[in-house]
Image 1 (cartoon, rainbow, N blue to C red):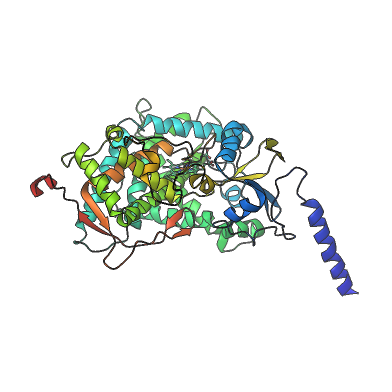
Image 2 (cartoon, helix red, strand yellow; image 1 turned 45 degrees about the vertical axis):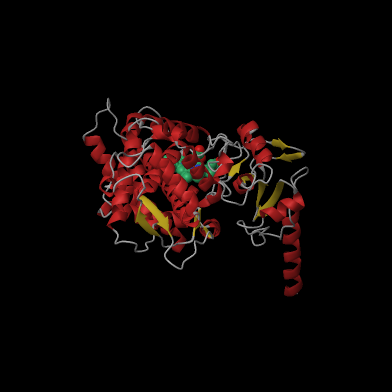
Amino acid sequence: DVQSLLLFSVVFLVIADYVKNRRPNSFPPGPWALPFVGNIFSVDFSKTHESLTKTYGDVYSLRMGQTWMVVLNGFNTLKEALLTQGHCVADRPILPLQDDVAPNQGIITTNGHMWKHQRRFALFTLKYFGVGKKSLESAIVDESMHFCKEIADLKGKEPFNPHIITNNAVANIICTLVFGHRFEYGDEKFMKLMGLLDKGIQIEASIWAQVLYFIFMRVPGPHHTIRKIYSDFMDLIKVDISKHKEDWDPSEPRDYIDCYLMHTDSQATFYEDNLIICALELFVAGSETTSTTLRWAFLYMAKYPEIQEKVQAEIDRVIGQSRQPSMMDRANLPYTDAVIHEILRMGNIVPLSLPHSTNNEMQLGNYTIPKGVVIIPNLTSVLFDKKEWETPYTFNPGHFLNEEGKFVKRAAFIPFSAGKRVCLGENLARMELFLFFTSFMQRFTFSMPSGVKPVLDYRFGVTLAPIQYKICTELYCSSNITPKQQH
Ligand code: HEM
């Protein structure tokens, strides 16, 4: 009868799923996976890792639907996988959403030739326009002035939410890189760009959007909004590309677009639609990340006023109030540098890095991981590794200082990940964080509105970001300068 046929079919499908998706031999262990869905509903990615490593060790596996994932934990494991055997885990898994809207385009989600060409080009361009040289550096210094003016214009000690203004300031640096200029914060085109980015990032970062896309790719529905966002973004950038073509001097490229146009005829992976996707990715990867870190910075400074005072005193001593900070100052500001590193460590804004996948079979300890398995480098487990940090869960700039107060590098400091896929904007991000942070600390003291305690809780989205908050700023006034010298 129908009932037994149904029961037989279900049992058959469960057995088929079990046989098809059994853990391969010598594969890392992991929790029991439900038929069809695997561990999708049993694992909370923001919390469960510590308990899983206790049971299964530093390398364990999870099944997400039909896909196997191996999660890597702890400094030694990540070092072995990402650095020593980096050539085995250089690929990204293909995600249905990205594959539909920008198949094999851009840098972040591509593999092979496409990825190599685009990554190399972007790194070269970033270097050319000034990580360490003048141009992007001066753009950041200039932007921090605009930011400070915006804050100074706010009335007195009125609490404000720093989210949007920080996003704007940071996005303007990517605008300078891509378009060759910044925008006023109220500019219509800029606001449109920021709106699209915000919507696009929220969708791309949502696991549910990815799942919906996977299941209902061919069915029209709200999950397809992302296509509209991509096409609106393309329209916006196409106008700029046309303008660039009109007044373009190949001997003096002004920005990323100019440099890209020089390549479009020479190599097959360089074409205009790909330029747009790469530009979009620079915005996506380079705005929210740095902006979130700065928002953690304000919060930590408000929570630890004594650390804030020490930073201000150091800046006062080395730079004073009469000039803007520059990258040359970094070596003379070890305490400030250590505080920025500790903000990045504790902020832990990309806790599971981005997914990698094995492009070769890989031997990790006693385990064999076949080609095509998704690899999750758990950066949290390294940034808070008890074996690497003296006080892993306490905000402690001393992690980056030696006994004489000199700055020391720490190998387990990997908020930008490591190896072949290491963050492409690491140098730019470090420069932005240093220049923005020192400029803010030079001028303002951050504090919570009266009666409000700083909450270090986070929400898990695109980045691990502080919950929206309001903060107060007061003009910083050092004891050794007269009020007249201040502004
Ligand atoms: C990738 C962190 C800022 C561009 C990544 C990854 C992490 C990361 C963890 C994944 C690495 C991996 O897969 O192993 C951060 C943090 C930032 C930051 C913490 C700021 C505080 C930036 C900026 C840019 C950028 C400013 C652009 C200018 C990229 C790109 C990738 C990437 C393009 C993909 C690289 C590839 O697949 O080859 N970032 N990032 N990031 N980041 Fe960043």
